Image (cartoon, rainbow, N blue to C red; front, side):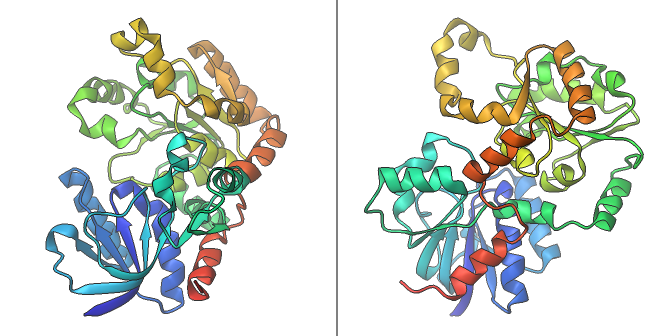
Length: 357
């Protein structure tokens, strides 16, 4: 039986940006890593996951092919609770894939691990308050996904601009809408025309591309994609981090990406002009249930737009005065994200190498 140092339990493609910086750091130290794929994505995404891991030089194993042939010292999960099937392990750890204040991060089944890597003081203190006798060792290390953005050199960023066909002499807008409730339906078919002096990167959620329910959004995308200053990210562009690294301002709606981008100390605009289905408009309690009210106090890191006109004006203001919300961003970064120094993966690797129960 082959024994790895770490097995990353990878439920979805979008776990990779959180896991890969850690895996690369461990690989530099001569530690073996396996990605254990639970294949919960659609076939297109699973194919992309395998191609990425092959390119990165990491072993992977699908749950459908697993026959107890491997084990590991550390089993690292990215979601609450253990998978139904997983390799044998000595110790377990949790590295969640998202940041923010959602209630799902503070449930009892998040405390079944030996180690819990935490992002920021808010989550650390909340866990200690709710579960003073919790099993895991808690380590406030930061958010490993952002290491790749922080560590990019100016030459790296220039290469990315060239790769995406963006003008290095223009400021860059990153528009990263979620699938629902989304601002996509509220944006004009010709909105890139109002930002002719900017590069525009449009990075929708996977569901907008893959689910039949959102095929109307794909028709909108076709209208935006014809503009020359637009780079439209496709499913293969699974990772938001390279786009965040080169963008000057981000527009999003109800996505935790607003915290990630603001943590890089760049201006964010929260587009509150979103589309709700008829049932949500009739039964407003459904909206309140879906949206996380505990996020409200942390939305101070972003400027909010409630109409398209307001959005256009805000983009121009934020690009001209990126320091406007800097104090809020830096304060809340410490609370929600923790250290953003490009060394989160180094800290995690150190803890794993020196772990004592």
